[in-house]
Image 1: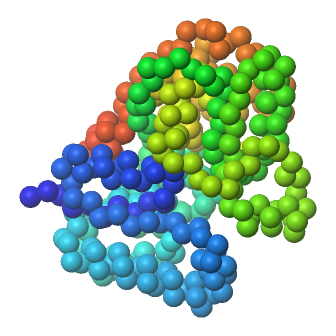
Image 2: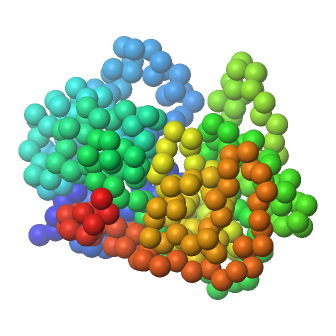
Length: 320
């Protein structure tokens, strides 16, 4: 009989579907619950406390029903923001799940999950500073291999959501790349209604040609990676963890330009393959693009291995 997993995670560029399929290939029966709902209507009505509470109540009821009716062996939660700490306590009181794992791809400073984390058997974080401060297990994100048998046509690629100073940094990188005759494909996603709110209500400087209001598909994302020489990564200033973009880049043997200096602490770091820049983007040395690209010891972060190591409670302990 296959083991049964209740998998709760955000719908983020198709990543949750990749994890689900990988678990199913390993023989698990997976029950997936979306941990995000960013539609315009939901974002508006959730600002009303009574309605927000009702939404959480219905969400908790849904996952309780799945857990109670299917004899779930493992609860695997990524982020888990749709329920508050009290909801999680009630959920665990009403269910009996032997194994409860949580993975966080946000820092505590961005999303304080510490109270909820205490309810889980094992908590993993991609943020090294949080692992040291709170005692969680440090475990970087994962990647999947992308077929790349074509000559690169894009010198610099960035695809991601908007936050903090990303647009300003991308604008500066673009200026320097243009001077060197390099091709750039930069796409910054943000819902149109939040973009308008920032521009006309918050009066933020949103000037850039890189805005996109429709999420890119996973298929198109893989196509872009296959045709790219170098990926640009701009981490959140309140996080030390390596982004999914970073892990996908090293896993697919692409060059990386990043603002995250913590990457120097990783065993796979190579100055020939990775260039760290400051957030003021002063003087990018694009000559590193012509050097050989090679990363050591990254196979453990390939998605299948990443899940096996986490669920078997073995190899990941070496990442502390």
